[in-house]
Image 1: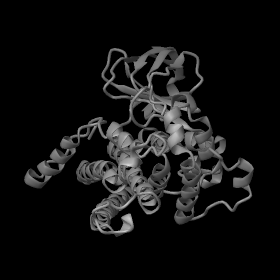
Image 2: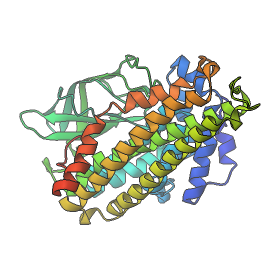
Image 3: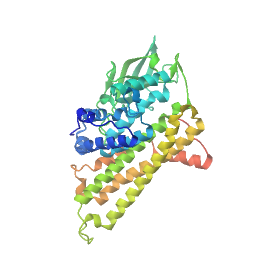
Image 4: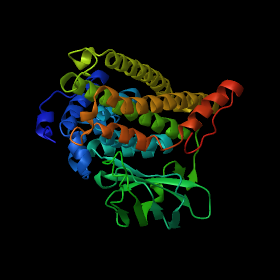
Length: 405
C-alpha cells in the first residue's frame, strides 16, 4: 500500500464540511484500492491501514472540534464508512466499529464520562476496538475496592491488536447487570489471539481475546453513578446504530464490487463469440445486468441515507427518545438492513456474469467482495429483521430492545 504520508495530509486543508470529509474518505479509499486484493490474500495485521485512517483524520470524524475532532454527525460517518468499504471492506468495518465504540460512552455513559472520553480520543487520535460479543456470557466482573476486575474470554474482539483502547463488557458477579469500561489495549491481562481465520473480512482483527484480571476503576463503568446504573432509553440505540454501520459497509462493498467489475468489463471482458458484438459493453445482457444492479444499489443507498437522517434526530436529542420512538426507528433500521443484505449479496455474486471466466483469477480478487459480504451478513439472521418489520406492519408490535434488535 503506497500510503500518503502524515506530512502530506497535514499540508492539505482540513476538511470542514460533510462533503469534504466524504471526499477525504474517497482519497483514503483510492490509496487502499491500489493493493486491496493482495492485502486480502496476505491477511496481515493492518497496522499501516489504521495509521492511514489516523493520518487522514477520519478517526476523529465524530470528535469535538475544540479537542481536534471534526464535529461531524452520524449521517456523515455512515457515508465515510461506505466510501472506505468500497476499496476495502475490512477497513470499512474497522472504521465503522471504531465510530460506534467511540460513541458508546455517549450512548451509555454519564455526561462527565463521555465528555472526558471524547476529548481524550480526539486529542490522541485513539483507535477503538471492542470485546463485546453479547452471545458470550463468560466474562465476569468482580469488585476489589474501588476497582472492577474483568476476567474471562470473548470469541470475537474486532480491532484487537490495531486498537489503542478496547471496550470491555462483562456481567457483574452475582447480578445480571452488564458493565462496560474502556481500557488501554495494552493493559496487563489483555491478550489478543491470532485465530481469526475466516473466508471474509480477513483484516478486521476479529479473533478471540483472553481477559485475565483486567482492572478498571469503578468510576469508568459507563453509566454508573455510586455503583448504580442510570438507565435511559437512549442507551438502547447502540444496536440500531451499529446495524446502520453494518448497512454502510455492506453497501460500500457492493458499490466497490460494481465499480471494480465495470472497470474490468470495459477493459478486459471479451464479447461472446456468438453474440454478434465487438465489445462486451455492447452485449445486451451485460448492459441490462449493470443497469439492474445499479438501480438496486441506488435504491438501497437512498433508503439507508433516509434512515440515517431519522436516526440523527434521535442522537441530537437523546432525552426525547421514548420506547415508541426507539421501536419505530428500529423497524426502519431492520428494513434497510434486510434490503442492504440482499442487494449486496446479489451484486457481489452476479458481477461474475458480466466479467467472464477469466475474472475469477486469484490475482483479480473479485471474489473478496462476495466473501466479505457473505461472512459478515451472517452476524445475525436477516429473517429476524424482516420479522420485525412484518410484525410492526401487521400488529403494530415494536421490537423488544435486545443485543440484536
